[in-house]
Amino acid sequence: MKQVLLIILLILPVVALPTFHSQASASYPTGMTFFPLTYKVISSLVEGVAYVRNLTIGPSYLPNGTFFVSGNASLQLNAMLNGSFWAQDVALIHQVNSTYFLVTMVINFWNLTGPFVGVKNATTFQGLGVICYQGPTFPVKTPFNLTLFMTSNGSLDFGYSVNGKEKIYLSLPYPGYFVMGGLSKIGLPNDLELVWGGPGGGSVVQITGDITEDLYYKSSSGLQVVPEALSVGLDTAESAYGLAVSGNLDAIFHPFAVLSPGYNSPSVLWPIPPTISVTQLNKTLIVKLSINGRPLPGQVVEVQYPTIAGFKVSFENVTNATGFVVFPNASTDVYLVYYPGNFSLAPNYYISSSVSPALNQAVSKLVSGFENLLNFLRTYNFKKALSSNFTHVEYKAPPSEVNLTLIEYISAFLAGVLISAILVKYKF
Image (cartoon, rainbow, N blue to C red; front, side, top):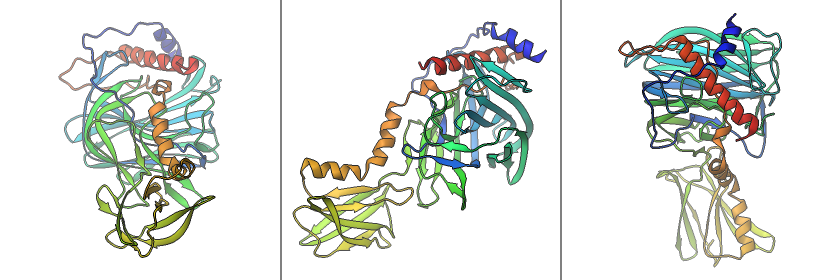
C-alpha cells in the first residue's frame, strides 16, 4: 500500500507555497570530496568524521526556489560501490534550539544499472532503482562528534558513531568494493564525499557554523587520510550556502577540512603548492618554502639545470626549522628550484629566467597534477548530480512555523528526485 501511495504521489503537483527564494550566489554540496583524476583507489571501508562546535540551520528551498522547511539539513557520506551502485549514509539533522539537535539516520542505495526486483523499501525513478531506509533517531548537543561509515565485505553495512558510540544500523546483501576514481555506469564520478546539503530532493539550505571534517578510506595498512580533497561534492544534488571550506595543512600527513561562515566555491583543499622564495647572493641560492605564510621545515628542495634531455637534479637539501635551505655555488644563468611535493603539498618550482618552449613544457609537467584538478573543477557540470530520496522521513519545522503535510513533503522530494534522474538519464 505504501508503494501504491508513492506512485500516486508521483503524479501529484507539488503544492505551491507563497515563499520563493532567489540566491545571489551559487550553492554546492559543501564539505570535502576525494576524486583522483589519474588513478583509482579500491577499498572495503570509507569513513567521514564531522566535529561540530556550533551549527545554525536556516531555511531550505527546492530547486525551483520554493520554500521547503526551516531548521533541517543533511550530512551525507556518499560513495560508489563497484561503479554500479551509489551508497548514501546520511544524517538528517533537525535543529531544536541553538545547541540541541535531533539526528535521524537515513540510507539511500541506488542501482545505477536498473530497478531492484523484489527488494523491500525499493522504488524506481526513470529506470534507476533506489532502496530507502530510515534508521534510528538520537539527540546531540554541540559540540558533538559524528562519524559516518560504510563497509563492504560479505555485505554492505551502514553505520555511524556519535561521541565515540558506534552502531551498524543496516546490512544489505550487496558485497563489493568502494571505487574512487573513474566514472560510474551513468557517467557520474566515482568519488567519496562528506558534504552538507539540503534535506533531500535537490534542495539547498542556509547553514553557518564552526565544523571540521576528516575523510578516510581503508587500505592494507589501515585507515588512510584521502591524499586529495575538493571543497564540493560531485554526485549529490543537495547543496548548502553560508559555509566556506578551507584546508588545514598544519600536519602535512593529516590535513583536514575547516568549515566556517562565508562563501564556498569549488576549490582544491589539498594537495596545494607551497610558495617558493629565492634570494641570490653571488653564487649562493637561499630558498624559503612556506604555505599560507607558515614556514615548512624538513622538506626536500632540489636545484636543477637544463640539459638536452630536460632538467637534471644537481643539488638537493632539506629545509631547516624556519623553512630555509641554502645552496652554495649553485647559481648559473638558468636554474630551476624544484619542490617535488609531499602528500598534502603539491609540487612547485621557481625558474631563474626565461627558457626555451621545450624546457618550459618540461617544467610545466612537473606541476600538472594540481592544475589538472583546478581545470576539472572549472569545467565540471554539477547538473549531473543525483537528488537524494528521503520520502519516508517526515521533517520537522520550528513550532512557530506552519508545518507542511506529509503529502507535501513527499511530493516535493519526488519532484526533486525525478528532475535529477531525468537530467542524469539524458545528460543535460
